[in-house]
Amino acid sequence: MCPDSMPASPASAGGVSGPSVADVIRIGLPDYVLKHKLPPQHHKVLSAIIKCRTPEMGGQLFHCTHCGKHHSTSHGCGDRHCPGCQGRQARLWLDKQSEALLPVPYFHTVFTLPHSLNPLIRYNRAELYKLLFDCASATLLQFASNRFGGQAGVTTVLHTWSQQLTDHYHLHCIVLGGAFDADASKWTSANPNFCFPVKALSKVFRAKYRDGLWKLFDAGRLNFGGSNAPRADRGGFRKLIHTILAKKWVVYAKPPFGGPAQVLAYLSRYTHRVAIGDSRILAIDPDAKTVTFKYRDYADASKKKVSTIRIEDFIHRFRTHILPPRFCKIRHYGILSNATRKTNITRIKAIIGTAELPKETDNSACEPAQIPCCPHCKHDTLILVKSLPRRSVFAKKPP
Image (cartoon, rainbow, N blue to C red):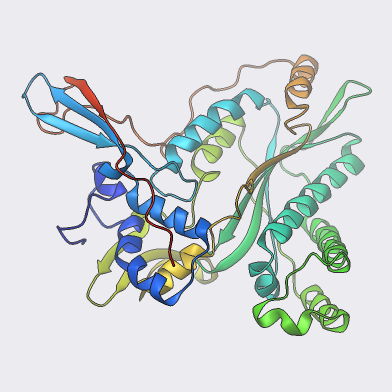
């Protein structure tokens, strides 16, 4: 449990007792910055998470007309890496995406990069993340064009972590089951139980990523810092390419979605997921400077396990999953691309019919109403007294 002297964490602010990611960072960050130099963006993210839903972020003061007591709430930080803020962001995003749902099959495919690429990715996150998006989407669109004679629609979500917060770079792809031939105004639907063969997807994806790596190398756009120094010349880079090509490139097709309702439920709790949520933090030991969290070991029949590590290591692992500035982790391709999605969806609905889609979604990941009732008397009798200004948003820039 967290010490009583700690400021309210995002978890406790929402009415759920227990330690949080913010508590871990709050305890460990002062010592961490003495040993590690943080980029300004990382310091900004960690500081925002610490201050999320605390008085420093401002908020509202309410008065209960039933029991006469006052109650205050604090604003969230809104950072996309914050476990306490992504529920609301997911709900707002989901409202926009529901308009693009079609009464057709949907498939879930995951593209994973081999771990032998991890050292190079750490020094080239923006370039190699983008290459992952480009190659996976191009592979899916190519297979759809060959099989259905039209253009598919793909929504992609980047995840960079494993359950223990280690590097695990993979892309979740939600694929429309079929393709649209705009010239012929024709929609060709896929078999609801099968879309593309994963072994063939893996081979094409691997070849595209290999070619993309060579283009980045030839253009001088790769950073060979740290342990990557031996790979900086052409001979060393060729050895790296041979190593990663010898590894199995995993493309995994999950069971097809049952329909648009399942797609919405998946999107509502998955697209805005961060590396680790507050619910997985079990205990913090401020004296020993350790944190205990639960995880699922997918290499061992998905068994639930517990890990205790140093807070310094936890912060370091968490920090590796902070995205590059302004990098978009959710992207749309093909007929779902932002530029033409509205027009394409309208035309496809006119072709296949506009069967009414379920409006109810699983918003369990979304945060509850900010003030459901008075926390003292449990009556819905709160009135707004005043807005509370921010005290400060971020801590001072580290040395």
